[in-house]
Image 1: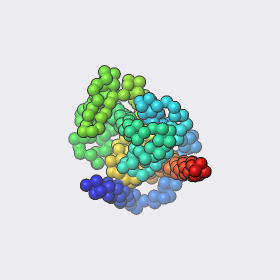
Image 2 (image 1 turned 60 degrees about the vertical axis):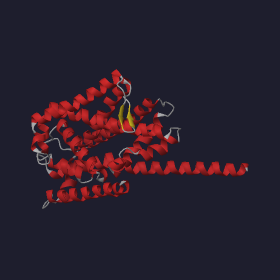
Image 3 (image 1 turned 45 degrees about the vertical axis):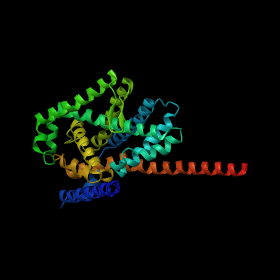
Image 4 (image 1 turned 120 degrees about the horizontal axis):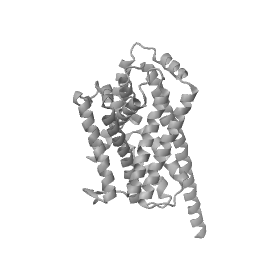
Length: 327
């Protein structure tokens, strides 16, 4: 069964990409996409490009904090911020581009943190807590959006059942999301018993760790959404809250689809949810997002991985030669 799933899950991602790109092509049928997008990119003022870049740095700083929070939960304090930041950056730069099946970046983290003395079990806890921190932030911000501005879900009325885009339903779902967050916080403060799911055991972190999670996770998502917000034109811009709501829906759809980097799926949902803006301008903003948040970090991450693995190989060969010399 596991072997079937190993092939089925990537196949789902490929189908999602093909289907989304086909639907995108239909959206832009009859339009001079290339010329319009280039014009939209040129129309973005330099200061908004700079703001988008700063938003990217904020997002990746928060992602590095995810790892630091998990290490504090494990009681690990001997690893430098620089190493943690580089490991986190590399992990997310690779996993964001490859797809949800490696969202946690377990292998990258294991290779890095095992060199600092962490066991496989410790890395597994770190991976789980980082993934949950992201989920917690998504639930928290999603709940706030649905509770404070439920009308934003109307943007998704063509993609979701009508009952889910109704304001009353949005309020109810938002309340449930925030109730989940409150329950998690209470469990942390009151030290609830660990949740046992089969052989998997989930323990509530300390209140100090929980507080850090509640700051870091929204910070990452706000930074990522900020890239698109600043890349969109000021005229007709629906505002940051609307961009955030659509970003949460689009990014979640991309992760669920397992499409590498949410390719096609992310763009389709975003463009469909922004009917008041020219499609070429929305697409230009999404290209900036992909460049700043995905492609440039991916290029840097590949170099980092190659240098790290080269260093490990040199170290291994050095130890081997020393051992042979002793013999």
